[in-house]
Length: 138
Image (cartoon, rainbow, N blue to C red; front, side, top):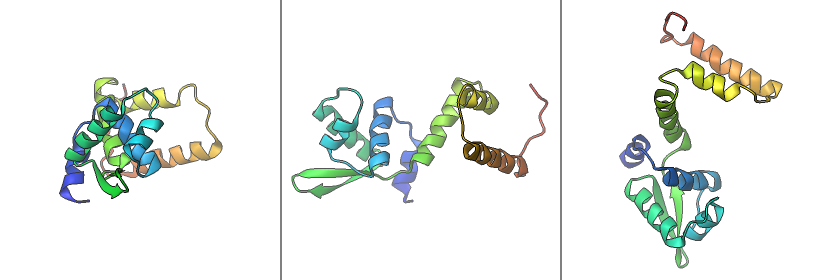
């Protein structure tokens, strides 16, 4: 990853910017019209265009000419942005408790056996890491 996308991954995105990035991550790329069409809310063409230009200035998206339109594509991975967003949620909403976040995520949801096995594997890997802290239970 070049410096610009790495810097973009560290920046915070507004809710609307995240909505647009989500469309680009899901589709791989999109013109202003395609992104606008995919967004849930009724957003004007020029608003989407301006947001894409802002995201490009931040180094989060690039574009290439496609006929008379530009096709925009993400330059940062969703995981890099998602991790930072989750950190903000853990710190602001759950007061630093990943355990509270996890409980909220799994409470009252149905999972397949495969999903549960994958989640257990993730927790097992966390337990095996050298940086596991021995803190008193809450």
